[in-house]
Image (cartoon, rainbow, N blue to C red; front, side, top):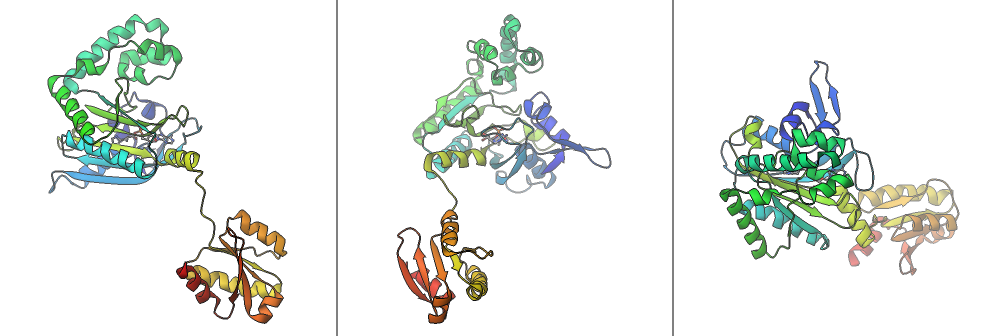
Length: 378
Ligand code: HAM
């Protein structure tokens, strides 16, 4: 979770927002600058190189799931600690790997019932074709320098492609007619991009070509993509990725192409909550004892039922039946076991189904087995 800060400065790029504004950095006892990882790709390559994963298999498919940290202004869909599901294919120049990953990501979302998402695809070219494009873009931006925000006036000189990411309205207006990378692709990059699109069509994956999609990280080459929703406001990207054929070498590893993506877990959960009213599952049984003796017994049953794999809850504070039923209801318990003095005397409790509201008697002699039997019968 913690890396040397320079890994991200070299990997993601010093001029990106992620590195220049959003990284949590700290200094260790020896004065080394460390950073909480803002993303996983650079770390995966660092580990790949350190552990010589290039020995043996020429192609490696790796994944990681875990927390990432960015010092951003928290808002809906944007957190300072969030989680990514990150997938990388190292060693294959594509374009099949490119299409495979986009197919995988869209299939995953479709399995979750998220069918309204839009796959945006672009190509950022290679070092050869990006040079002339940068020069052209810089020339264009210089013409409109007066209209750009102060940040973009700096970006225009240091990293003009980043102006595409600016959210300031007047910069967005300037960028509407800006030249795009797609018009500058060299033969190799054009063929690569065409092949990716053909595979996507053959695989039945809908996509839009979005020539303004720059992604917020500097390591990308050729194919980039982002899955967007219309439902989370400004934070509309639920997943993003792309090819980064130069990064491995840049970080001191072999000359190896690679591509990957990361899904933002919290954004997916928010979407699922909005679309399907997703709520946490309640306990299997809420125990509602009435009176001291029943409370003591219920406490032991509670632990035994949990050991048997059931999700159970009870309130240790003595309370009347009405209050306990209310508590069980609030927890969205599936069933409530009611045991008072009368029930203890008869050795039969009352099991109430909270959905159908039906009640049945249940023997207290061998309660745990009895409940397991009932659960298995269903
Ligand atoms: P990214 O676009 O910076 O790409 O992040 C991927 C996803 O993480 C975003 O689409 C979004 O869903 C989620 N995310 C990012 N920042 C936040 C935040 N502050 N709060 C909540 N969710 C957030 C990468 O990180 C690249 N490493 C992806 C990649 C892998 N490219 C190649 N391989």
